[in-house]
Length: 139
Image 1: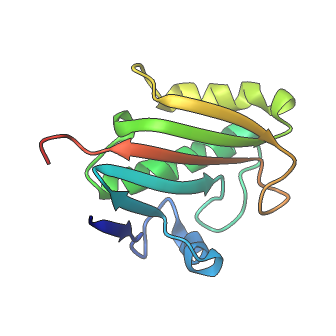
Image 2 (image 1 turned 30 degrees about the vertical axis):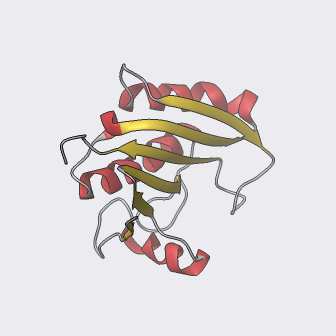
């Protein structure tokens, strides 16, 4: 059984100076195992480390980070098979989340669980998205 971590290269635009958070929190951006790519929860921080101002912007930033990880593995958002998103104040913030999500995710849709939470790692963070993608069967 081969399990490999996926490291984000320095200078990756979607991550910028926030790349050090993986080491600080002691986890990998993603792990490759059994034909799947397990992507750690991605949040809505800009490359300079500041949080997006709205749920819509934070959702877009988190999805762009997921895209960057997928691109590094020669995949795109269509490879997603299972996604879980965590939402602070879900009833209030869900419409903005859905607006951003619809710009990125097309049919056929991945399985997606949407979970409301009291808070995330930083008080300004309103959304976190973790995902699992599959590699093409012929690889």
